[in-house]
Image 1 (spheres, rainbow, N blue to C red):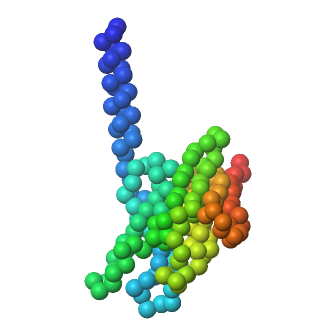
Image 2: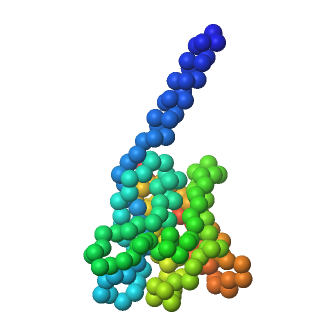
Image 3: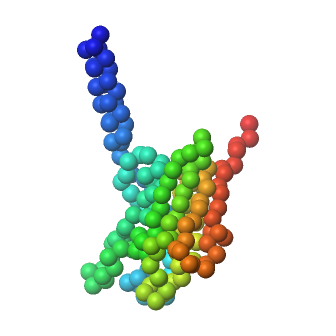
Length: 171
């Protein structure tokens, strides 16, 4: 009896690790900088491929991953993703049955206007747009986006908070 329980426990552990290790090539959206181009500074919402664990929370959080897109050899942009460049943290929790709770933590956000020529509000708006686009395409379900500002920040970040509920299909 004891041996069979150990065998079952080992079997479940192996099966769980096999599922957790499943990686997929998928597409996400990121707010990228156009530094190194001849265009005026701007935030570009771009669909990019990622190789990632097939867990929705990880795919959603990848919005904040550094991304050094292919550049000419004389261009030196260490990271093209504004979310990671500005140190915006993205956390994802699956709660309340079917809603993802997503937090953009701006408490350590770096200034962007002097360095990159774009406003922080443009970056946060683009990141929120990336999130919505990802949910529309991936059909993960619903989400609620909250924003945590820096202490003493007077910017109205509430206007970028949002909820998304996919439309129910008619029968």
